[in-house]
Image (cartoon, rainbow, N blue to C red; front, side):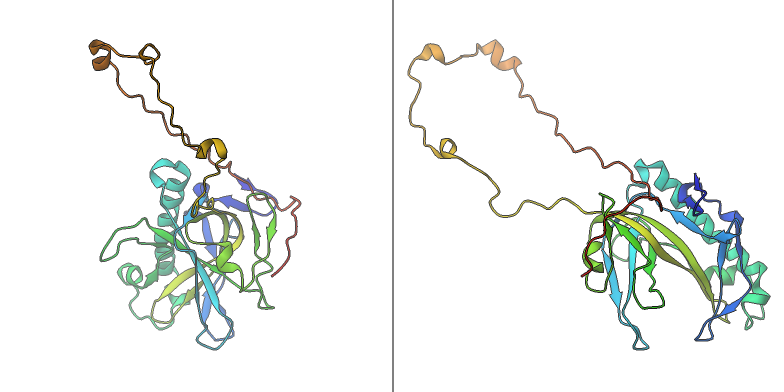
Length: 286
């Protein structure tokens, strides 16, 4: 389904073969890049609800600028959700399409290359789908998304909501609390651009446009019981009338088995759709 108002496409319906590119541009640092488009418009995708295992990562700008932030979202749960599975397949196909496009546009994109090849671009390309395989363990594959600041150095253009559709304004002070470790979120993301380096290195920057974040319920801490006097009262009476005590016959004792109750689970929160026309409650900035 595509939202006709803002051209947001669900990631599980995304067709990577239909992406196109702008002419080569140059940023203020003289780095080259191209814009990535879809149906002649910016590529905007809505992801299914995905887990955020490690929260938000922060690092300092090497040029002395404002701190930068990124977030990794996991494909855990792919076996039980067709939308996550289709999203995963589409983004792997997107990576293949980017390598194919680099070969087709190599003269324009990479001025320093004399012998471009598919094998070269496979090694030089920074994939969108990051492998979860490490030396010590294997985790679900993941996506890396960036929080890109606006021209004023803020995140005010990134609309983040809680499960009640209340607006949360991101700042440097709260961004890591808004997306804590282990939370889940629905993101609308944009392929910001594809950066290019003369010797064939390239990759796409995916930035967060909007998000709905679902925080985990707070775990029980310390002594969480609520007792009254009846619970604390020590009972000393013993039953002396044997007629009041039920006694099983040997046959009954052998046939009865303990009954285990099925654990009850809270039903999953219904999937929330982001709409630019919905009214939101404005919460105070920190």
